[in-house]
Image: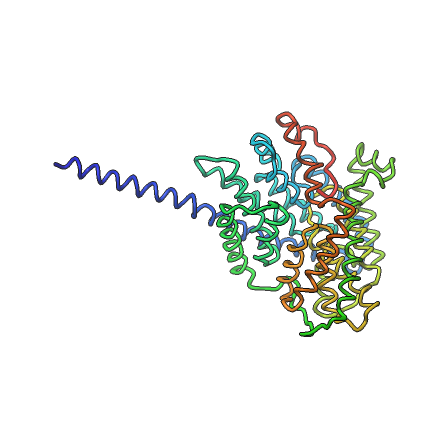
Amino acid sequence: MNEPSDHLKRTKRWDLGAKSRRLLLQVGLPWAAALLVGLVSVLYADWSKRASDAFIGLIAGRAWLAFVITPSLTVLALFLTRRWFTGSEGSGIPQVIAALHARRAEEEDTLMRRLFGLRVVAGKIGISLIGLLGGLTIGREGPTVHIGAAIMAEFRRFYPHRHPQLERRLLLAGAAAGLSAAFNTPLAGIIFAIEELARNFESRTNGTMITAVVFAGLTSLALAGNYLYFGEISVPPNLGVAFILPVVLSGALAGLLGTAFNLALLRWKKWMPDWLIALRGRHPLVYALAVGLVIAAIGFLTHGATWGSGYDQARELLTDAHSISPTYSIAKWGAMVATYMVGIPGGLFSPSLSIGAGLAQWVHAVFPWAPMGAVIAVCMTGYLAAVTQSPITSFVIVLEMTNGGSMVIPMMATALVSSRISALFTPPLYEALAQSNYFHIAALPAGGFLQKKPVPPPGA
């Protein structure tokens, strides 16, 4: 008489256990991973600012010290990258793209092992902080994308049945959460994942990605508050039809300078002298020392304007209308190219936005009647769009960072013009770097990538 009742109880317990496990896998693990991404992103942002401030404090009143600090830490950063942290170099976005678009499951598995994991996260954070402590022109936003994707992907180990689709959903969600937490721009994080990383959108990715962005954003909100990355811009409610002229000029200038940056990174073997290419290949630490001296010299000649990510200069221009040297954009561009030619961890979002803000002074000199804040917003959007060739992501990032709702149409137009100019001459930067630097890794023998210790690819 009791057998049917006992069987029913066992069945109910089994159903309850199965539902609990399913709930943990579908909800609990993604939430926990996203919270961790948000926590690490906030801590990394704080550490990055402290590192930059420490460098400025060290050289205050004695700028000559940069000729000691910057080359020394550049050499240290490259040594650590090549010795223990290969796979962490560059912004990290090409690594995410390579893993997302692997052609076969075994390729993806190889890329996951060599370009992600806790080793790469530690290298990404630690070495980029060394770079900032040395005054190098790097940002933290691209690395946060890589870190977010790596952390989220680590949680795949808790799933009993792993498959490529699961890993890609976690990578994409982590990358979106990382960018969202880095800039406090949740919408831009989602759009960036769709436009730049995935190049498409799957319904199953929808929930995981949005969940990751929400929980990473909540963590950032709880720890850092609801802030605007660059502060709120002050723009007249009606810019008028005449503002089309500054938009066109901004798009053209940003498009050309962004194209030049992409060409410098993608065609470096064509413009770099043969002796310097040989030095880079045979004696990479000596090469890093030379680059560090160049970056120190550029910073010294610009009175410190080009050291660091460029966040402070862009924010001052945008919020306080402070002027900086008309040559700032070119000097910062040169420091940025030099930094990325070393091949250490570091992003390009903040430096790119800073270069765009500097370009605004050129446009404003031609059209002095145009509101400076509006010109800065469109120039930042234009240069970032030219470098990344992701126009939607670019204008949404600047829109959310500045609360520039009234600037939507001008920023969209500038992003479209500059990205189209860039596309005439170069492929999308991140995708090209992924193709040239990481798709071949899957063909190497086990451990080959780490054992060979190749010179880190520039701008990866």
